[in-house]
Image (tube, rainbow, N blue to C red; front, side):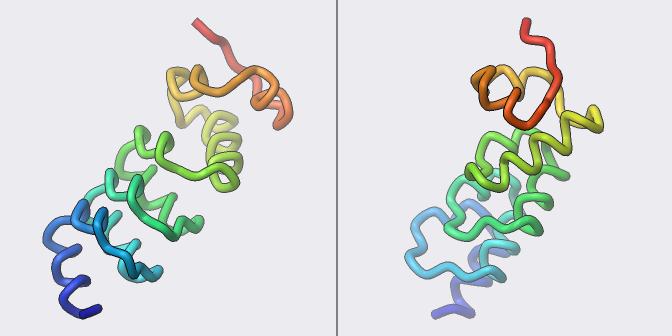
Length: 104
């Protein structure tokens, strides 16, 4: 079954959405094929999330909380993420990580 799921995900990353069993390799392949698959992955580590965010910065909105803190703070500090991604976070959350920003 795993081999079938892996081949399916390689063809369409979003097919991971309905898969009950997911491991790191499956999640990585799904995100490699389509960054939007990050929304449906049960496993989100730095490697998987970074791959998605590198493909498209909009993937940041699908990153789960603990990793998002790291990616958001690193990305904003380096000026890699646009301010529209910062606007979705409350002021107290951003200040906690000493992220300086401008809300429009």
